Structure formats: C-alpha cells, structure tokens
Length: 104
Image 1 (cartoon, rainbow, N blue to C red):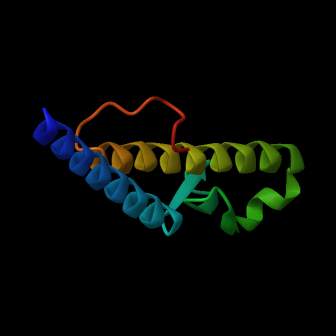
Image 2: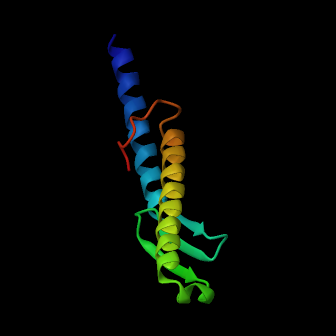
C-alpha cells in the first residue's frame, strides 16, 4: 500500500511537471486566423494577445465588411490557439482526460 502511494505521488509530480512545461510552451505559441480568403489575417499569441494584423487595402473602402472580417479573423485565431492548447495539454497529461476550461 505504501509503495502504491509513493508511485502515485511520483506520477502526480511527473504530470504536474509535464503540464507546467506545456503551459510554458503554449505561452510562446502563435496562430494566425484568416477571414475573407486571407484578406484579413490576425496573428495571436498563446496568451490570446494580437501580435500582428494584416489587412488587404481594398477593404478600406468598406468599413462594415472590414469590421466583420477582423472579428472573424480574431475568432479564427482564438479557436486555433484553443485547439492547440487542448492538444498540448492532453499530450502533457499522458492521455488522462482534462476537464474543459481547466487550463485555458
């Protein structure tokens, strides 16, 4: 029983280390979301901060469309970050189920 508890504690420590490493890697992650067939591109960090914005100059005449495409590109980048985060954390957890929203 004592050996099992020690083994369980070692596994928990390894899991914690893996998750901390994955979180550090996610902070450096970047994803680019696109909208309008690439007319608007937003690059976002793993901390959900916009890093770069690219807008096709032909959109500058249509503010409403530009607003919609910027929103869509931001949402696309955020979803890509979320998917990458979930995948990275799942790998760090060694296949153990991670409750949604626990790490991001």
